[in-house]
Length: 190
Image (cartoon, rainbow, N blue to C red; front, side, top):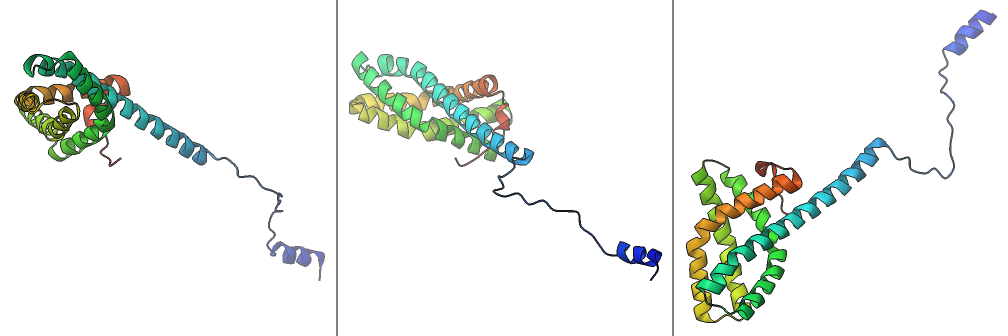
């Protein structure tokens, strides 16, 4: 066999590059794993910010509205009012996020539309979610049956005046605090 034919024969043999094996190989952080961890941290921070915003919005709006209803119209004493409001802070903190998720869900189902449409959707959401909780709060706060009836009837009558303003207040806070348009909320179950 000539040297030239030997050279041609060996060129036909596939040769793989040398492979280096490392002992105790540590996982290498890739840009994909870094992005996944960053996204997870960002999602936790976003959920926390949304929860804080919802709690602040619900408590601040609720207290401002409750003062004239409970003290003036229902005739509650300052002591009763403070007992009911302190319970409301606990209730509102617990229900603020579920209320916002419920509102997002209803708005996603019915959409946004004219001013009258948005008014009707926000009023429905506010009344259907808040009235049962408001009644329970009044009962636990020690209000009398007459005070509860007066406050709840008043609540129903002015729910039309509260639902849309609260929706606008919440949307405004979302724009300011979360830099998010009202329609850009994702509807999720938790």
